[in-house]
Amino acid sequence: MKTRRIYSTPNLAAAQAALAAAHEAGIDRDSLSLIARSDIEMEAVPDDLREAHTDTIPAALRGAAGGGAAGLLAGLAAVAIPPLGITLAGAGIMAAVGALVGSWSSALMGATVPDPVRRRFEEEIEAGRILLVIDAEDEALPRAEAAVLRAGAAPMPYDAPSAVS
Image 1 (tube, rainbow, N blue to C red):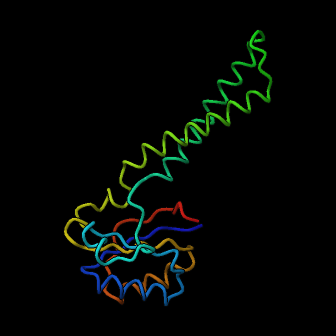
Image 2: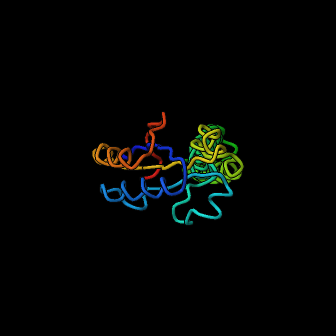
Image 3: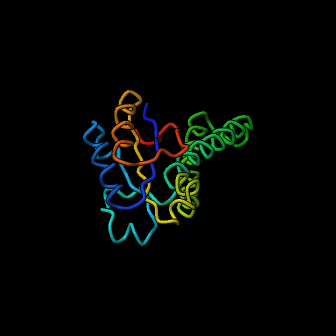
């Protein structure tokens, strides 16, 4: 399982040094990203290192679960009413349609909500600090953390399972 850790750096040079240290410690480049104020990101952070700005994917997953459950319940209720003529296969189709509609509508809503890291560390980001996000396997994190701290990054109070796998 991957865990997400966040580190704060005072400027782009320090962020790049911490990023390189994490990479040298064995963290894949795909598991590393940077979060900064929008003007800093646009000018200095490469596209492949930018963290997603919104909560779209987690919202879509939550919507699929909620919509699928609602569709399944509606389908099972329809099966219980014989005049409707809905079979168990029809209930399954209703669950699938519910999951699709739930994903779509939740993803649209999630696109307007900043991701959890941006929400939690909004003051740090607005102050011009650059956050390094590491999504790595639990056994690789101690080695990476030591390297990132030696490079001058400061750990932030964030340690959560990662949605990225």
